[in-house]
Length: 413
Image (cartoon, rainbow, N blue to C red):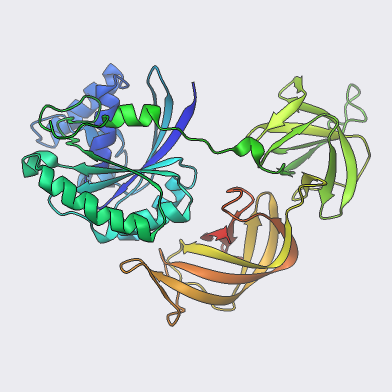
């Protein structure tokens, strides 16, 4: 049974948390004690019906205000597929949280209030989805019960979004009229929309093909830790632990250790206490090499014919996370896979105007939640791929040297 990771996005009060609650409730993925707890919480708030949004809005401030503030992850499964959901906030000031939640997603559910149509946040979240290379978008036109399930309103919103998708070069978009509150077209088809002939939301989530072709990526193994037990049983053992960030590696493969360009052969791969012949992307393993070579945390093992790019000057799209604005010509720490180097901000090429989807080359001030194209220069060369080719080796974060706060996330171009 394969896994689908998806994220929800949309403006405040578009019904993201309610939709997830309805998905879990109607697919029988809620335990009785959970249902009793949210029923009790709903009654305390004086609500007439069970507020399914409380399933994901776990923070006290979220429940008091009826909004999502932090990213909430939920797991559920149907007979056909497993799912991990990231419920992300709708407020503009929490755009950074949406970037975090969407960074590992295969699909984005973008909600639109049928009464209001396409909003600034719809465009913002669609742009972020395209920036993060999310392959599929389902536009859920919610609260159809409040517009009498009007086909005309549905078609108008769909027409407006088609133009946005074309601008952002988003290829795979699906459109569903729903009522998250009442469950129309969420798990079961609705009798209120006889004009809608497509699948319900859960049917679409179960059948959408997500082919990342990760097995075809070049092999990338960033070293996180050197294992030296120094016990009698493993007196001479030296292993290199890490998580495979691309492709596959097998016992017998010739590898190059970056940055020193030393060649060696893989003699063993273990996962927990089990020896395996081949490790695939995403697996955390320990590797042993034929030669006693100098390998440290931050080094990367690759195959000789699959070398990454070596760069000190890096251009990237960047989302600024911190309340303190970016310091032009400022110095930051770059964390890339398991490697850390220092860098300086060289230039801001442009800042994205989300409303018009245009590039502003005049405004070089980057503040919280801004998205911009930035050039940096690192103190030592990094071995990178573009974000389009590999999301792990193509991404990095900027960290403040003094406070150790995460300042921004970057996608290498």
